[in-house]
Image 1 (cartoon, rainbow, N blue to C red):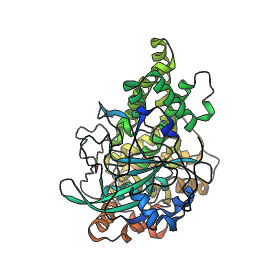
Image 2 (spheres, rainbow, N blue to C red; image 1 turned 90 degrees about the vertical axis):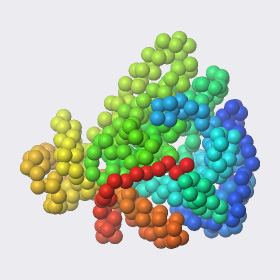
Image 3 (cartoon, one colour; image 1 turned 90 degrees about the horizontal axis):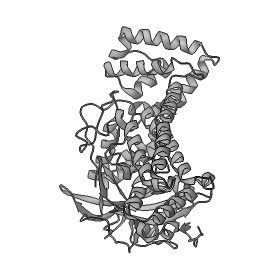
Image 4 (cartoon, one colour; image 1 turned 135 degrees about the horizontal axis):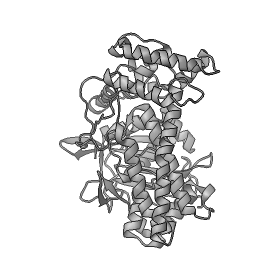
Length: 487
């Protein structure tokens, strides 16, 4: 993986993905837009990438971010993949995305730079390959909020208006978003290789994934089994963080599971207000397949599909390969539960472990569900001992639970002050409340006013600050709420 030329903007791009077998991508030229205009730039992320934010905001930089030209060292391509969408297998691919290359950062990291909404590709399947402004801003906002919460995620470098309209139900302002990721290797990429490629193609992809993400295991005696184990570990940790934050992805198709362990593709996602495991926001998830309470199970289902794609590499004897994969899959739910319970202990100020901790946490969640209590604000109230107002805190069952919790806190060496600080660091003051998100997006789309979005981003940048400025953003959303994929 060789370095490419450094430009004055700071681009230092490599194109290692293009050195995979050609079945995995299609090279193509850019699709210029009429009059690109930068509307938001992530200056802090640009600095991390080694990019000059002033140059990026200039004419040449915006032209690159819009897909009107490519930086030195870039070999633009669209990645091919497949996937199970709501349980049904289909051929997919980057239908509206352009991979510029991999930025080699000053810290020595290799990060994909992808333009989303950049126009038609060979995988567009009749679509226009474009994106509307609102969903691109939404992904920017939610992905940055996830980063602030400490949840592994792709990030957004910039959003550029195209000066063109995209037609969905109505004509909408078009936009291109620059997305930064550890990589865009998906479970669906491996499914594509296993279904449509040769064993050598699959092996090349697996070797590339090991070198890119898991170099510490690539020399193991069965490195492909190690690859599966590492992906299982990362997904178990990621989904636990989703559950602990009340995040609902909304469309957990196998093409939306990154083997890097990052959250990817923010379509119909949202954060839960009142605690309810059946919470669904996505307008297309009529059966609740991807409801909050189903996310751990669905991640396991997706990992099973990943295991199926690797079987020919795990062992030459098919039955042995299946047995090895099944054995590793059984570890996923144990790992998830371990991560989740460890996180829940922190949310409750617990430093040590006791056998009854799981029951203590689950009883609180059951009470929150029964009394329609807000998930985030309940933990915030416990953190600051402000247990007044609301049906939950007046309930006798909660008083009994609270007494058990206080007794549990007293059975550890740490002081109340230490427990309080642990809870402060583990329970956010703010999440992207649905009504606040919509308020910011509406102001940007209809009025060209980005100040509301910038204020919300500033509040969400450090959700554990518990600052006075965040107080106004803690109010739960009210009424039913639907989200849309925005494709």
